[in-house]
Image 1 (tube, rainbow, N blue to C red):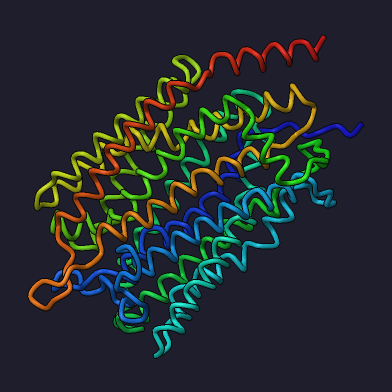
Image 2: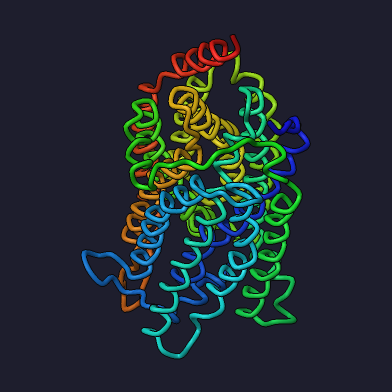
Length: 463
């Protein structure tokens, strides 16, 4: 039997760099697609809705906008492909491993398709642009799934101990928040390039620069980590959707997922609206989005060691419930905020607490459930557990996209299409209520039972 190399924190940090890459690409789409393709410009933020004339804006059915439907269908398509890719990855027998070959092959196409979303749907024909936007967005979500599903499976496989599972969750949380935060710099980078490339061209060039950085970050762990040197993985024999059904039959996993769907619905509403909250409600220029996000990131990172140390002592469950309630408080503040930059800093600092908690611990919970399943059944289906989680929470994200764009659909006032501040506040209220529901649902999750069973089964196998 081949002697495996020990998994070290250095290896886990190198692995986490890949999370920076894909979260940067995801952040560009989540934070700026709606902002640049919908809305109306004003004197302070002339780039709002700069590409809005390129695609259909009016609601088409039941007050649902075409753009909202496209984004929602994209998330649903993404969710459906998750178990397919997970099953393919779990059953694969590539020489380079079950996960790394997927990551290595898709990193460059993933970055290129992100650039295309801001470049290709720019013809003179709105209908053509609508179709192009739909097709390219579907490809974006497909490529993200091909990279992220195998990548997430490695969280459980590299997390061979409880300590490593919490550590790798901490590291990828740091790189995730770093990538997401850097994505908020898009207007700043575009502003520096505007004299060179023009108003619209500077945005496209800024996206291209960020996508290149993201691509390099995704390729680093893909080529550095030799999967077979660290993981003795055997291909699963269970077909994709049979594996998915098995995963959802796991009672503790279902309890976790119930709250996760609600959480991501609320978080997606908030993230999609963040640029609007700051510019339309707080009266802040969009170039302040990055400094505010950087503040939130800095405070959150300061809290990472605290969360890392408290999780084994207090339990992940207690901290996650605390994170839910704190996020609900942040959403509530946003719904009642007034004008002024200080509101932005209040929200940023308060949001740092739940971001630190919920950025780290949910992945560790999934890894715990996947590890217990492996010990009980002898079959490693880590990819499917993480895919099932993303399948569920992306459904929540898809619904959030529809809800946000529907609530904020422009109204014609005095012959001018306008989105009222109250419409943006309403999205924050919805996020507040749903986050509280998510907190209550997570109380059903039995962490103590899962961890005690893992320890008992490991001790039994060691005898």
